[in-house]
Length: 223
Image (cartoon, rainbow, N blue to C red; front, side, top):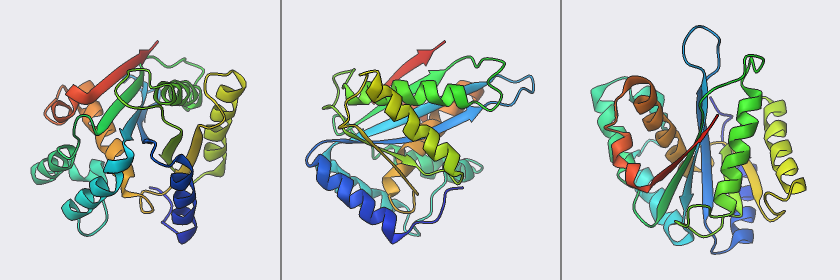
């Protein structure tokens, strides 16, 4: 569960949004299974790239579908009614206003016990893909917004990934990474939906959710 929303996070986001102007923003989330319990270990991260002119209308549409302001896809998928609710939110995605990019780390090293190495690889590949507009389906992204983690060391790790990418010249310093609660930015519900839809397809061969967004999704698989 993410930390509660606060006015400070909202103000930070406003500053970032002003800086990028009319540029798109990528919203990030992850899904994973890193325990060594005999099941497949994987680490997946998704970005939903939203164009500037669609950001406010899309947020308003999500809020109209979730009037109580609380959304967590995993909880919704426990019932058929909730699954249909999730599908209604996925149908807010439209070409060319939104693009999804998924990076799937298909095999974790045995020594990567908590998935930290995999997270770094997946986050780095995803930031590079959206910043360089690798698939040509959106303009270059200079701001990624990711859900804030409760443990400061995890947020610091994500920032270190960005720092190393800049040092390696994979991305420019203009590419910012902001960590906030979904309570501060409901557009973070979007990558949560994408990750859950992909996980359903990956683990359970249920593709009715992913099918809603497959046409506008690009999947990158890492060994």
